[in-house]
Amino acid sequence: DSGSIQYLTVEYAGARLTNEDELNGIAFQGVGSGTEVSYVQVAYNLDDGIEWFGGTVSADHVVVTGVGDDSLDWTDGWQGSLQYAIAYPGVSPDMSGDPRGIEADNRDGDNDKTPFSAPNVSNFTLINSGDSATQQGVLLRRGTRGVIANGIVVDWATGLDVDSSQTFTNFDDGTLRIKSLFLDNT
Image (cartoon, rainbow, N blue to C red; front, side, top):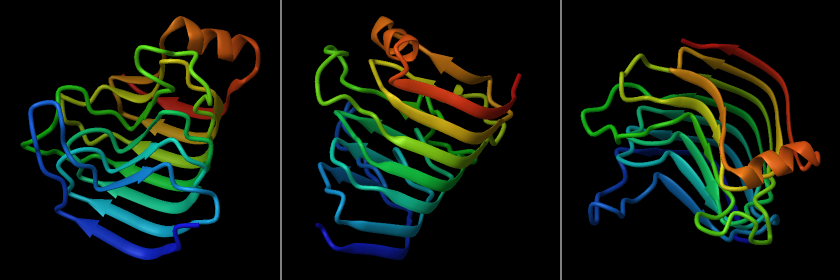
């Protein structure tokens, strides 16, 4: 239990520490399920809006706007949930080379490492800003598992992209489920 984060807005945060290391608006580092996260907004952040690095924390009623990289990102075995989220990346002069609505990973370089990232993500809307740098609305890769359901993904170059052999294995065996998505993309 890391306490409670409710009715929080994080604006103009993030910093580039090196060319490979930047700070997210909110980074959950192995945070547990006893933590309450509700009604949170990240706006105009230099890097990712919110990123989960492992842990089991869940969040609901999340808004991410105007970020320079991925709006929502997870890796390293995150097993919480996200419900009621809206992301609109905006147009940023500091946009990364590969911004996405959702970037979902298990573990880079070790895609079958346990515990697997396996969050339940539902009731979300990802609307692209029209910035030519933006790529996928949802990218599922590197062995991620979980449930992606009840989403709207609009105006991205690619709405849904599933990569990596372990991710396909997870889809085939039912540990990654994608259902009820509305995709309207180029």
